Amino acid sequence: MKTLTIIPSRLSATRLSGKPLLKINGLSIISHVFKRAQEANIGEVVVATEDQEIVDDVTKNGGKAIITSNNHKTGTDRIYEALKKLDIKDVDLIMNLQGDEPAIDIDDIINLNKKMTVYPTQMGTLAAYIKNYNDLENENIVKVITKKNLKEEDFSSAENFLRNSSKKNNIYHHIGVYCYSAETLEKFVRLKQSQNEIKNRLEQLRALDNNIKINVALAKSSPIGVDTEEDYLALKKIMEYKA
Image (cartoon, one colour):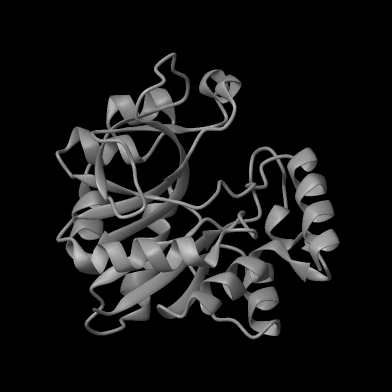
């Protein structure tokens, strides 16, 4: 099966403006993500953005990027436009990686892609164990409830995604990486935003509300996403120490 990885990215993030171009070890966050995706070696990788500065940065660092509209409500809409513009033939799976997770585990990307090729499913994502029960009530940490307890070999279906919960069984820290079959992506972007999605600010609820099944693979760890200046400084410290 042929997989295409598309990384949506834009400079006008609400909480930390300009974050894709913030540097860690002399390389921008978006170029770190691109290189991780490339190292996973599951197929071609492209950044989709509305900003020429991001295109310039990615191409300067040996990557590929494409300009998309600045009117998209969600990253998935941006990915779909990029897919149409790229016009790459015979793509079976589209991997949607977040542009603000430069520490994403390469093995987790490979594992999700492998699960999508083995199991006939419409859409797949990742989740990790919750180590701190305080995270259950932290609205910035999205949770997923799965039908069955997650084990490494499983690809259990998601029952719900939520921002806070008192439930402690079959609940995991959701990692915002998605893999869609090409036809599911097309179906998804044609659907109207659901009330559930708007209320909870969780795009994946649109899929569940429209009977699109989402399967969940267990990730090795939860990567630190860069949403705030504190996140950036914490991750910069970790990655520069490791280097």
